Length: 313
Image (cartoon, rainbow, N blue to C red):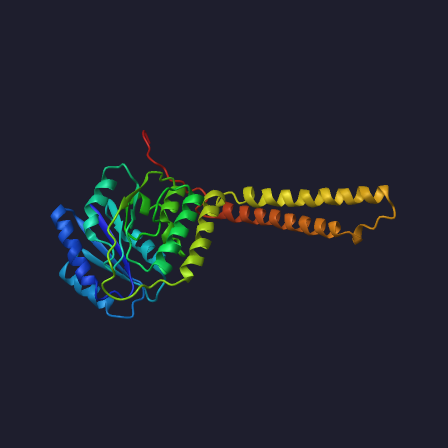
């Protein structure tokens, strides 16, 4: 199987026949062995009936149906599990991503120059207030925190080597940060390609303002888990120790002041309560680190490491 094309969707019955026919024309022209995996994320229209009909006419078109809406990340994760192609391409079902981009994306991965190629919708047709400005803000924040120099992390049109999609898990709202997940999994060859962005032909967008808050929380989660997921004591223990020592030094200062001046009332000073609070916070952070270590050491995947290749074994 040369190519797996994963398309998450919700209530996109109108666009599916046109999208699949367009993809088929492109892959047939390129003479690629392919599969199209459509993930119905709890649609309430006739999307599943359309998918079933498309599969009946072309067995290479496959479908996965969720019982309810779980979100784009869950849909992509299931698609990654099911994909069998050497190259995996994801795209949206609303016809805003052009299937004509597939051959170039495929070749960029096949050349082994890149593990992941992310599309960049340099010219957009979205409303400026609700899409362009927030997207630029989030992309700048993600570039700064992750060190990955991409312009459009949230572009649905991406290409991956098979090894990438089988090595990462996407959940929550983390589909926006798949390049970050890939980097933390050890895949450093991440590229970018300017792609065509088309006006929406059918229906309306399925994403609201809540995605911005959820996106930032998930980015913080990715950055923390990537650095401290297998060694939480290095984070909580460090800060716990610093807080505890700060409180201890303040307490020593107060005790010395009391010795030098017996009339000095320690409990009447704000520093006493600050020291007490800081020491309690430090102790709690240290205990959180111990608890995290116990969980990490007993996790079944604690020693799951990605191996590039072996020889002589």
